[in-house]
Structure formats: structure tokens, C-alpha cells
Image (tube, rainbow, N blue to C red; front, side, top):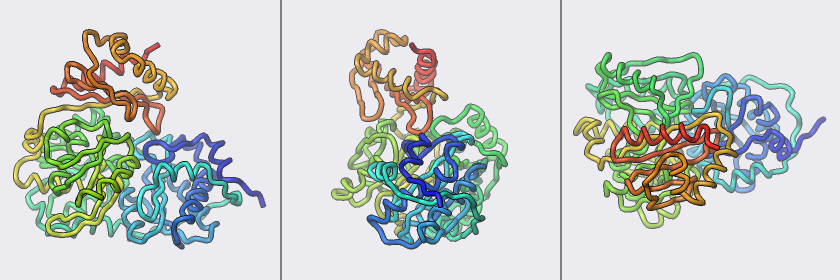
Length: 475
């Protein structure tokens, strides 16, 4: 019998945690690397919780089923029962597991390309913390080498409960008269969304299901997807288009004109619709969230749901209703909340469905584009340079921090003063023009991200394009 040590296996894989889970190339996630992560995670959970079951689910990536089998085998090696929910959205897995008070593992790389994948871990009470991540990496658990894998039997309970979580809030005619397009692509929740919206009375048109994995990034929507939405909206006379990223925890929604909403604007409108008092949001979000004056308190954090969630306990001591959302659209409900005179349980992990539904509730009074136009007009845009070494990104940001104005001048932004610098996560510079430029290495891929904010939409986009073009060959 050959034994392996979890910490050594994980270290030799070169896989690290990013802003949301452990991510890496598919070939890095070998059977025994998946097993090592699973053993380490369960071992850490057993120091705090008592449980006999562990839940597992996957996205639609070609590599995900085998990774799930490896994780399941490791769980069984520890004498625990595996509940396998198949392909479902990450928030569906997290929700049912929290209700059952058991930990879970989601096999997903979210929006990153199909040649990569990842693992997300959830405690019985929600997402793991940054401290939990370090404990997993450093755990020293011996386990037997896995040489064979078994097929897993799918349990449909998580999918059913997730849909019921939302359909139970409203009557069956809440969306009557609405024509909703579902951009299905390879989303993990594509088989759930059409029935869910139909159960609320909407007429649903399924759009562009793909047998190949499509890496939809809700924070950097492609020009092709922008054009598709406009075409679909006109062709099918749609009131709304709904989609998500690969694992269904980040929404992508378009208004009556086929214009995709920025994720933080969607989050703002959702939080306002359910009367949230206090918000925790990442530093990259639109400053309209504060200037609209619809919330009693807003805290800004580092980018990544663990940082947003970490603020919930503090906010809950002072406020009755607490939530958070990210620039990519994922909405985190930090407290039990009343919606339509019914209680919806807290779900402190990114979710795509609640913000979409609450926007549709708000749109019963006026069109979505009017809801957006009623907000203080600040526009954001973001994009990234792919296959850009993290070390190079860090070097650029380090140089920029030393002398922001000299750095801006060097890349072509002359005659501008930097009136504020925020180093919460990367480097966020507010300029004398009142524009904002924010640089940050991706937490889960070799990418340099640029976020910009301006009072004019095209200005935000041109800022990002100019910065990334100049930095792509920066020396």
C-alpha cells in the first residue's frame, strides 16, 4: 500500500487558491491531487464540525466528471458518504449543503478556459475563509494512492431545492406577459433556468446551447456576446435576457434593448429592491453605489467573495439586513431577508438568480433601462490581458505605487494629477479628471485586469483599452 501526504502532493502540483477556489491547468488536477485537496479539506472541517456526508457537484467542463470521481473516492477513503448532485450551479450546491449542515466540494473553473479547472470548498456554514485556505494547503494528511475510480449516481435534490427557493417567493403569474431569453451556452444551471422562469409565468426562449464549454466572463463581456444580445432582443421581442458564467454563480442580464448590465449595477438594483440596509462590496465596484444614497452603510473590501463575506459578521451587529455583491454580478445574501412578505434564507455565496428575479420585480413598475438611467451616471468598464505573467503584473503595480503620476505619464496620461490612491487590492487611482483607473493581477489566472470608471460610458471603455494596450508591451 502506497501512502501520500496531502501537503506534499498539493505543493508539487503548483496549484494555489485564487479569489474563488483552487485553480489550475487540467493536467495539474490529477486524480491524486484532487484526492489530496479533498483529504486536506475534510480533515480541516472535522476539527470544527461533526458530519457523516459530503456533497459534490460539477460544471459542464470535460474534465469535471473525472475530478469529481477522484474527490468522491477520497471522501469514501475517510469513511464518509458522498452525495453527488451532478451538474448544477455552485449556489445550488452551497444552499442544499448549508441546509443539511454538511461540507461540499464544487468542481468548477467558473469562467476560465476549458483547459483549466478548479475546486471550490464550502464549510457546513458557507464558503471557506482565507484562513481555511491556508489550513488546507498546510494540512498533513496521509492517504492511500487512488488507482481506480467509480461512476457516481446523481441525486436531484439540490436542483429541486434551489428552484423552489425562488419560485416559492412569488405567485405563478409574477412574470406573466414577460418574454425572457435564456442564453444557455454551457452554464451549469441551463437545465434549471427555463423551467424556473416558466413556473413564474414567463414565456421563455432558449438561446444558443453549446455542447462545447464556453468560458463566459461576466466581467469582460465579449463584443460577439454584446451583438448577440442586441440581435436576440430585437428578433424575439425580449423583455429580458438571462445568462450566467460557467458554474452559475455570476449573472449576466440584458435589458429590453439587449444591453448587458454591469454586475455591480445589477447588484445595486437588487439590494435596493429587497431593502438591504448595509452592503459589503469589493473596491472595484462602481461609486454610484455610495452616491445613490439608497443604503445606510457601504464597506469596500479586497476583491473576492471571502473578503466580502468576512465583513458580514461585523455589519450584522449593527444592521438587520446585510448583503454584498461583486463587480462581476454575483450577489451574496448575508442575512435572512423578507421578500414579498416571505422569508428567504441567507445564502452567503455568489448567486446569479436572486438579482435577476429582483430586477424583474422592480421592472414591474418601470422598464429596466429606466431603472438604470435613474441612478447617478457613472460608467465602469473592465477587461484583461490574458497570458500575462503574474510576476510582470506585480512589477508594474509596484512601480506604479511608488510614483503614480510618473507612471501615468510614462504610459501616455499626461497633465493629470492623482488625487487619491487606494491599495486595498492592486492599485486604484482617482484622477483629477474624476476618472478612476484600477490595475490588479487576476487571482486565479495569468491575467492583468484593468478597471475604469468615468462619467461617460465610452470614456471608461477607452481608458481600459488604452491602458491595456500600453501595458501589453510595457518594459
